[in-house]
Length: 394
Image (cartoon, rainbow, N blue to C red; front, side, top):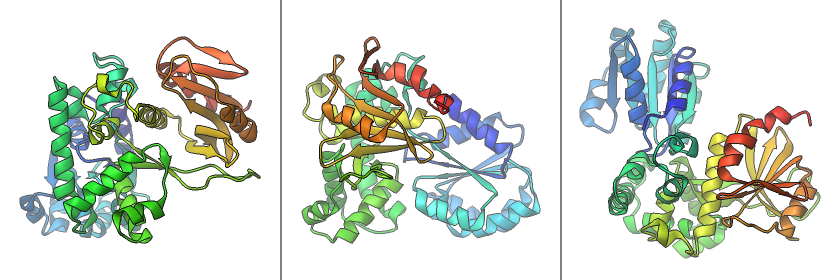
């Protein structure tokens, strides 16, 4: 599936910056996107996968290679695995200051950002490639239910059967657990430990992250538990949603909530094999909440930052979109198409004084309850979300 909006974004940045960095989870489509863009360019492109020893050897004298191929587009996959390249790229870029010379791809963000910020500040632009989203499948035969159940990894989403989807997920888990952790984290962990971390985090999806409880369950220190969670987030597998508490004079929950970013991977971890199995499952509500949050974050206009809100007295909003330092939109997420408005959501909207308040459901017509708009996820993404910043003078 061609990621048109992201393709356009990368192409725009390539006209401005010598280096464009595309980050995202393993198998999310970074290489496919980069190769597609390379094929549309008039100049010749050279592709390196730095997990292949043969490709690494070709860059033993990277400085000379880059100088000899200065008129070509060079795509370097898993760039974070060869950090010595970044100090070489800076003088090479400065000697021949033309935009669109390099595309760097990476599957773990902190290592990549650290090296680039130190060596390529002002010379590189960033694009994060998330899973396939609602807008990208809206014109296809893939409906929202299928996207929610299977998740946004391109290959399993497009497979012909649920068994084929499950087989891909099983292989993805095995490859990540047995190989990718060592490569990406530069630390050897036992497959048992990694699987245990995955299982525990999937079990608290949509809930408050308690590092002490996680550490005790794994038999490790709190500091080590934090480091493992940091890695899982850096590899784009989970998202920590932090609480909003600026200028709120109440007893606020100040620990993050944790979500698996891909709903299909979450369902695989819970051994949910079909959409029918998902309906009525004990985790279906948490899964829907995380899916909607991920969709909103992907589609949100620039300038809106995601948080959640919860007090010890029961006020709660699943998602708070903050503009600058002002809570701008409160969102409650319900799996029912005829949801009640929780008292805690009314209280959170009053605490935060958000000018826009929504309850998002799977489907159905819009309606209002006491100035709170109830709408489907499709209506929110297409109709309401794009206009939130346009109404910033309200």
